[in-house]
Length: 241
Image (cartoon, rainbow, N blue to C red; front, top):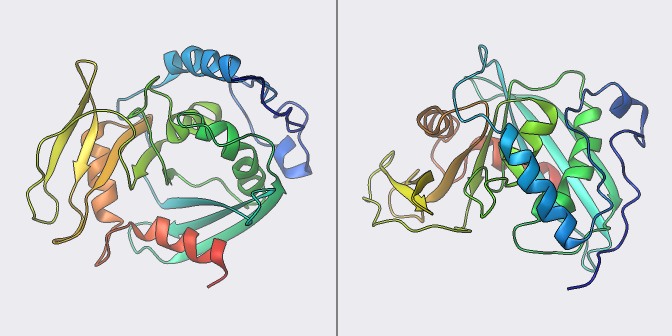
């Protein structure tokens, strides 16, 4: 595959004033080829922490990124909820041109630039991010939740609706039950049943959180639906409903 379309976004030279105040660790160029993007992931995976290094969590955020019909515009929605009440505290939206193609395993290069724009509009950073995507349950152990967590040095969890890599056994049809997701001889996540009679979710640590704690937060953010309230709130904001 050839080189991707060049990106104009660069975290060192932010597009908006709020982004200039956001501390980004390990900044890198988003202007990358497929091979370069994979190399960046391989480098950043060394910074991922899968142990609990988080303070008291008083706010949790859901992230949702959508595209127009032609996929020429990317729209990121951030919904920040109080924890543990799950009441909406703050929200933001950002829209930017889509400048990276859809490539399995490289979702973060397509979506993080517009997510950073939306996060920069918040009055304060949330204590924990629940991302609609993978954490370390990824071929190079750097899905969008891990990538974003490392860049911002913020605790994050990947909560995906579909499996990207790995294998697992059957999941008991009981709320809160889970089985390990394995890949390459490693436990990379959990296949979690959040509601009886519906498909499970694929939960994996993103950054600064362990798998057991990630599962606990996902369940505490999930009420009577399959998806956590963080994800649902961000999706409603993104769709305008």
